[in-house]
Image (cartoon, rainbow, N blue to C red; front, side):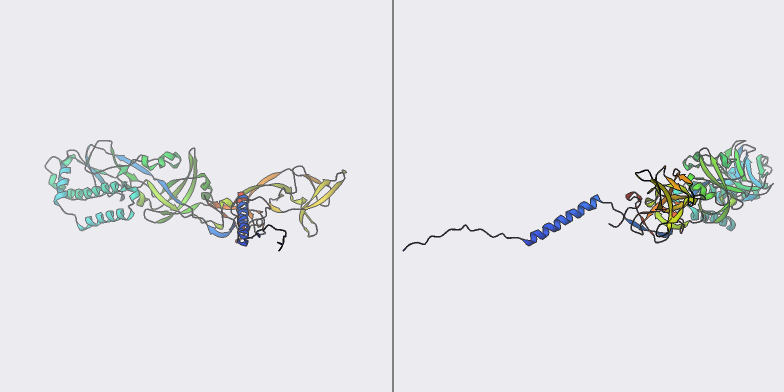
Length: 462
C-alpha cells in the first residue's frame, strides 16, 4: 500500500488583537496631549466685576498741641499740690505750697496715716480709678505709671487739705511763715507733668517727634523736694487745640477734598469735628486737625489715637492684577467720520498702490476715550507717520501724538477688549473704579484677572 504524499504547510499562529490595550493607549495619548497643551497654552481667568468698597485704615496716632505754659517754683522746699489735675483754676486759686523746713510734710504724712477719707474723697478716687480701668490698654502699659502717680498725688492733696484746715495749730511754733502758698497767675487747666513739647507748633514737628519710644514724660509729684526754678506745674490756657498726624503722600489728596472731618477718639469713643490744615515739611506730609472743645479731656495726653471717619468710596471693585496701562494715538475729533456697510465710526486713511497711485481707505476704529479735542484710537491699523484725511476736504493729519490710558481687558465678547477705568481709591490688592463711564465698565462685566496673560484682541475661548 503506497503512502500518500502531500505538501506540508507550516502552521501560523493567528494574530490576537487586544482591544482593551488599544483603547487604553489612545486614552493615554490623549491625556498626554492635553497635559502638554495645558502647560504650553495661556491660562486666562475671568473676574466678575461687582459693586464694593475698600476697608481703609483710618486709625492714626497723633501729637496733641495746646496753648501751654509751664510755671516754675518760686521757692525751695517740699512741694504739695491742692488743685486737682485736669481741673480748672481761676486767677488767685491755690495751686501748691512749698514747705521750706519739711515740718508740714511730716504733719501731712502723719495725717494721711491717722485719718480716714470722707465719702466725697472716696468718690473722687473711685472716679479716677474707673477712668483708668475703662481706657487701659496692655499695649500702652506706661499709662499705669501715670495712673499710680495721679492716685498718689490725689491722696496727698486730700490729706493736705485736712492739714490746711488745722493750719492754725502751727501758729506760735515759728514754722508757719516757712510755708509758702502759690496761687494761679492765670486761668487754665492744671497739669502736673512736662515733656518738652510745650510751645511747639505744627510746622516744627518732624518724623522723630512721632516715635513713641523716644518720648519722655516727667511727672511733677507732690511731697517731693524741689529747688527754686524747677518746674512746678503747667496750665493749658485755651480750649482751642489740635492734633497733628503724619500722612503718606498717596493719602494726602483725601484730606484736600474738604475743610472738616469727623474724628473718633479711641480713648473714650467720643466723636468731634475738626478743621483740616495740610502741612508739608522737608521730611513728610502732615495733617493738623483743629478742635475748639474736648481739650480738658485729653490735657494730660500728648499722643492720642484717633480714627477718621472719611467718606467711604464705593464703586466697581476690581483686583489690581487686572489693571493695565496701554498706549494710544491721539486723533483730532474732526477727522472721525462714519462709513462702511454698517455706518460705524472710523477714519479715512491715505494709501498708495504698488504703482504709486493714491487711494483713500475707510478704516473702522474703536474709540477708547476722549479729551475736549481728541479721540484715543489704538494702533492696530495705524502707525506713526500715516496720514488721515479730514472728511469732505483734502486736509491731512499726520499720526504722531501718543498717550496712555489705565484700564482692564473686558472679555464679555470672547476676546480681550480694552476698557478705560477711573480709579477712585486703591490699596495693595484692589481698586475702586468709577462705574458706568462712557468708555468704561459696568457691574457684572467680566475682565481678565491677570492682565499680563493676554494682549489686545486675544481670543479667550478657543
